[in-house]
Length: 124
Image (cartoon, rainbow, N blue to C red):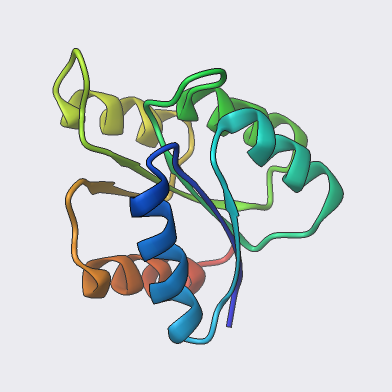
């Protein structure tokens, strides 16, 4: 199973994702914003980061760019429900920056687990 960092400023959504992934056997660390996420990545080893794109303090796009620069071997799944712009526009940017997979919110637990399995099956 994977060591996963999940980043989302929506606490309820973060808790649901964390619990779903843990029940599937993954080791999961939650983070509520991009600054917290990068602090955790700099001090722990993760196989996968699942990050929301629209967050205060440090957005997911910034997290992805920093991960690619500092930790290029970490796999990334980006998720978004949109904001001022359509979610697909944000997700397209995330893919161009290096996200291996994207998920449009809302998504099911099975879709989340499928995305994790797909990304973890590919070489870092």
